[in-house]
Image 1 (cartoon, helix red, strand yellow):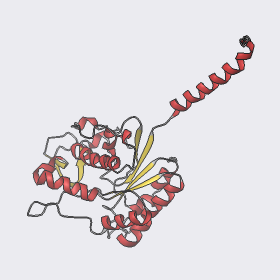
Image 2 (image 1 turned 180 degrees about the vertical axis):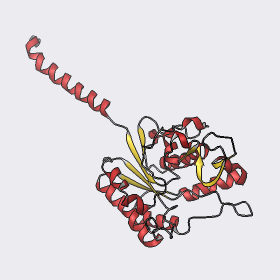
Image 3 (image 1 turned 90 degrees about the vertical axis):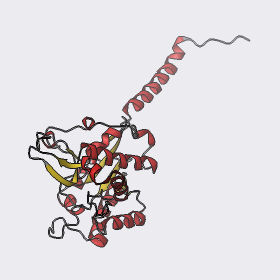
Image 4 (image 1 turned 30 degrees about the horizontal axis):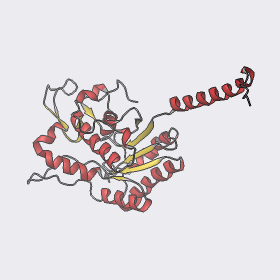
Length: 275
């Protein structure tokens, strides 16, 4: 018995369906947007302009360690506490843009400590946890994934040459909240303390804003600042954050690269104006 070959007319619908399927597949593949990593934090994480270089925040440096499959959206604000960030509408600004599957890194504490300023002060075991919970609950309601990040330590060394803790009960309060709400925790306080202890009092000067007079045009008189980073420090702290996100499987490992590379300060981008 001979098999009849399908005529050309009968193949047209089949070819059309196959072409449509391929088109959809190609569209979906090309439309796959990179994962977004939003950062809510303070001046230690925020982005600085070219007129402030070499000052930089770790959120500004984080893109150095991200592959094209991920993108950082740095919303950190200088001077912000967990309370003032909410009151200024910055959390709402993130929630308007964040999508299911995105991540929100939440790192506050430096300015929550300021008892003299009621617009920013929070108490570790009560209002601090309450404000942080807003970030967690509201981002989860949008289908996003919150991550708590304890405050990076300051450059304060004891007479014996060891880092002295400066954040009081705030890191412990954040750790407790992470356990209570089942949120991933990046213990940047502990990791930065270990890093700064390894590098030592003199070595850490290249991480922080310790600049000699005439060394940088933006700081003709020099500066000594033991809280904020210059580019080298921002990069090393961002490396800690990125490595922890990868090692804890918070974000897929393909989102990260260059974690073991030497990164020059010029890898950081300083915008001309505030975003």
